[in-house]
Amino acid sequence: MFRLLPLALRNVTRSKARTGLTVGMIFFGVMMSLTLSGFVMGVGETMVEEAVKARVGALEVHRKGYFEERDKAPLKLDVEQGGPLEQALASTPHVTGVTPRILFAGLLTNGRRGTMVLATAVDPTGVFSALPLADKYVEGSYLKPKDANGLIVGTVMGHSLALKPGGTAMLQAQAKDGRQNALDLELRGTMMGQNPLESKRNITVPLAFAQSLLGMEGRVTEYVLAVDAPEHLDATAAALRAKLGPGYEVQTWEELRPPLRDARFVQRAILGAVSFVFLIIAVFGVANTMLMTVMERTREIGTMLAVGMTRAQIAALFLLEAAVQALLGASLGVAVATAIIQVAASRGGFFVSMGAGQGGQQVMPMLLTGPVVIAVVAAVLGALLASVSPALRAARLRPVEALSST
Image (cartoon, rainbow, N blue to C red; front, side):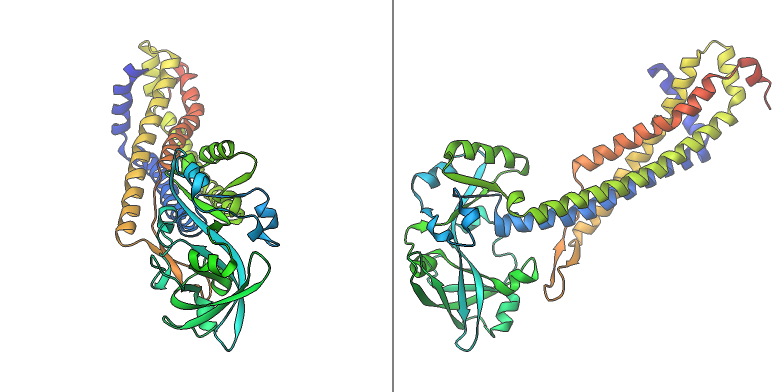
C-alpha cells in the first residue's frame, strides 16, 4: 500500500478545488470540536481545581463513621493531631501535602444580630501544603501563622453582619463535652463562595482557636491531603485504606462533592456529543466529495485497471487519498484550535459568572492531549469509513466500460 502513497499525494495535489473542499470540511470539524473542548474543559477543570486546591482537598481522612455522624456529633469522632497517623499519611506515595482541620457549627454574632455558621478551622502554618489555593478568593488578608483569633467570613455574611477588616465578632459553639463556649474573633477578610450557601454560612478560623473553643486541644476531626497528579487519586486512596485499616475512612473529592463530579461528567458527555456532530458533518462531506471524485475519474480508473492495477490497489489508492486529506485537515484544525486557545490564555482567559451576588472568576482555556488524539484519530477513521463505498465503487468498475465513459 505504501508504494501507492506517491500516486495518492499526486492525485491529492492535482485536484486543488476538490482537495480544498475535503480538507476544509475536516479542518472545520476538528477545529470547532477542539476549540469548544478547550473552552468547556477549561471551565470544568477550573471548577475542579478550585474545589480540590482551595476547599476540599484531593483526599480527606476521618475516623470510621464520621460521615454518617457529621450532622449529629462529629466532634466525638476526632483523631490525634500529629503523631503516627499524620506520619503514616505523609509517608504514603503520591501524597504531597497533609493538613489537619476541624469542622463544626456555631453562632456568629456582631453584638446586635447573629447567624448560624459552618466553621472550618485550619492550621495557618500548614494549610497551603494540601490546599495551595486556600486564599485565592479572599479579599483582605488570609490567616497568618500564630494568628490566635483571625476570622474569614463569606462575602454575603460579611455584608449581612456589617463586618469590616479589623472588626470583631463573637463565635459561640458547643464544645466536645457538651458545654457552651464563646470567644471573640477579629475579621481578616471575606471569601467568595462557590455557591450562595457558602457565602452566607461558611467561616474560617485558626485551628488553635477552635481547639480552645471546643475543648479539643491536640485533637482534630479530619486530615486533608494533596496528591501529586489526578491520575494517582484512586490508587492513593486505595493505598491509604489498606494502610490505615478499618478504623478510618478515606474519601476522594469525587465522593465528597458528587454534584461537581456529576456536573463534570455531564459537561464532558455534552461536549463529546457536540464534537461528534461536527465530525459527522465533516465525514458526510468527505463521502460526498470522494464519490464525486470517483465519478469524475472513471476513465482514469479504467486506464489504471487496463495497465495492470488490481481492484484492491484501486480501492487502496482512494482510501490513501482520503487518509492524506484527513490528516492534512486534522493537522490544520489542531494548529488553529491551539492558536485560538493560546491567544485566549495569553489574554487572561475569560470571565465566568458565579451567579447573582457571587461575582465570578477567570477561566483559562486548556487543550488536553486526550481530546486532540481522539479528534485526529476520529477524523482519519471517519474519512476512511466514508471513503469505503466510493473506493469499492471505483474498484468494481469494468475497464472497458470505464474507458468508454464520457
